[in-house]
Length: 272
Image 1: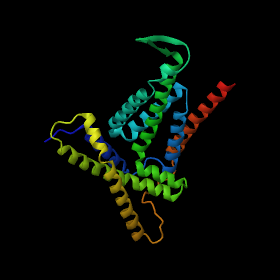
Image 2: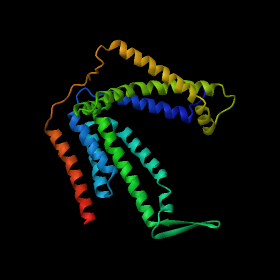
Image 3: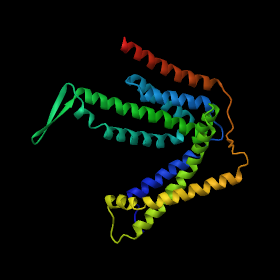
Image 4: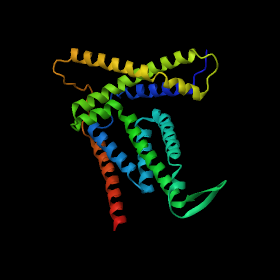
């Protein structure tokens, strides 16, 4: 049997990740609205913050919450953080070379000199830290509450029903779409007469784009017709049982507001 390619393993793991997101815990540890609003506040604060102390604090909050409420998912969460940090580092690699400022070192490459600036390194570090902190806190809340718990929070916050319906539908449809992609990719690889390299595998993957678009359109059309055939009033009702507001919800929301307030005060202090 042919060994699994990199593309196959990537899509298979992605499909499995979406399947895990679809499994909502039977007993939600927090009120969905409180948890969702706290997650949005902490994620937005981490994404827009330039204070390493606050970013580290948000990361520690994520670790503590996940260790207490969902310890078995800690390994998967750490893998996600490592992937996000590597990806953010790769994306921000040009910053030390293209940012003007105090030159720390010059790299000679033939007749060209690449200058590494202190400001560029600083921007790279802060960019990576912000990405890691924001990904860490939001994925921690998703693993604690489940994807459907987060959507239930959006519903309690009175977002448009169509938006929550599409979010609920996407978590079901995406794994089906990915597994169909895997089957098509395996069929393409089975027709190769020699062992394929990574580049040729991704090249083969691009050849199924058109067929995937047609299948996706057909599946969406069938799904739309089936939903309309089973719906009399067109209103979708969530099956998630909402948890009451407890002391832990107040503590969590107060913590999120405290972090937001510290960030705002730090910004005002720097402006003055």
